[in-house]
Image (tube, rainbow, N blue to C red; front, side, top):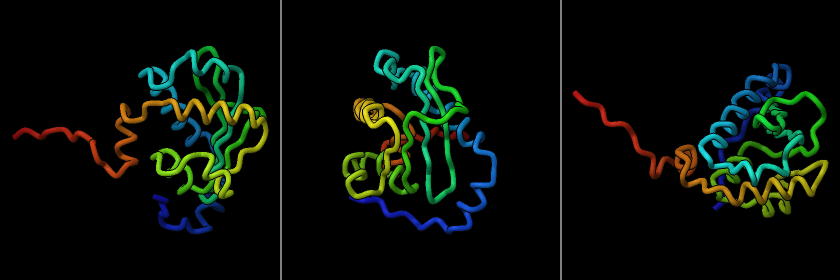
Length: 154
């Protein structure tokens, strides 16, 4: 099943490209750190990523998140990335919700991997190994199925 969300108007990307990219980067880094601390991302599995810099470029949103992984975990990064993943938002959402796999998106040219392709494959394998079902955000990406909502007393 391919997710085809609403088309992002072009002006959104034009505006976002002019804004600082650190707020979305901080949000992504905080999410990755939370997943790491919750043991969804295994430190041993992450070790090949140590000292490397990554960039997520959401093309239709005009957002670029550049971050690295080191001894203390994930952090924003300022140097050129070792590998860059470029795709529209709908492709990243389909990948995160496991509606599409990275290979399919790549061969359909909806996902572009630039730079160290071996590192890109390592990241893909790491993402495939994550037990997303244990993470509440995964259920939200799947349309809210399985999300436990708090009971309101009173």
